[in-house]
Length: 276
Image 1 (cartoon, rainbow, N blue to C red):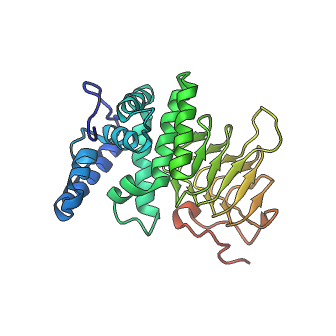
Image 2 (cartoon, one colour):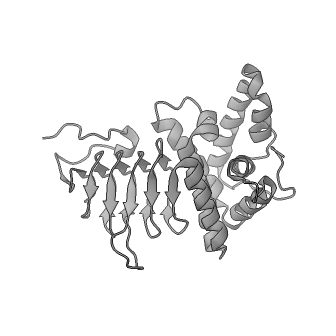
């Protein structure tokens, strides 16, 4: 079953960015297919025999998420339908993949991130579940959320909103509520909670801006805004809005030091840095 794809459906995006990332991913897969013969069949089925990044994502996730009651073939069809309904999934996935490659010093290749980094896989599973939710297929969306939680230790509600170029580093224990938002180009470490407060059914979760870094074990609670370029230090509990380019730390979190320098999501320094 591995490596098949739904015929006559083009899952390529119109983005040149997607094409560039896909080209590099295929080159790396071809190199390792020769270098690591034991992985050759996997690499051919998952990447080298696929037409584009969208097809590769569908096949890879369907193999991962399948259960005896929900076969790989059925999942392949559902995930394909999700991408057809929202083609931006493929472009965003390419930007996520580049974010991991650029920011994680433990990542040696696009191939490593695509095949084995559960943060990347969890976000792509979310993207498909979100597309299904928007199409009115909420039970399928929740099924994908549940499988992602079981497999990757990541629980993202399908109703949440996540931009592109987002990296979940290690990812284990990441929780994101229904009305939470993450902007573009953010980096988030393991054990982070973007949670609500109380039982209100209105907008109740955090809104994370762009280029934000959230350190390991941080909790951000309630309908508050974390401004662009902000940094939340590891282990912090954030209960109030954070201005742009501000570093906060502590329980409860408070501003520390001067303004953030540059792009904290890019530098990946989840400590306080130099406090003035």
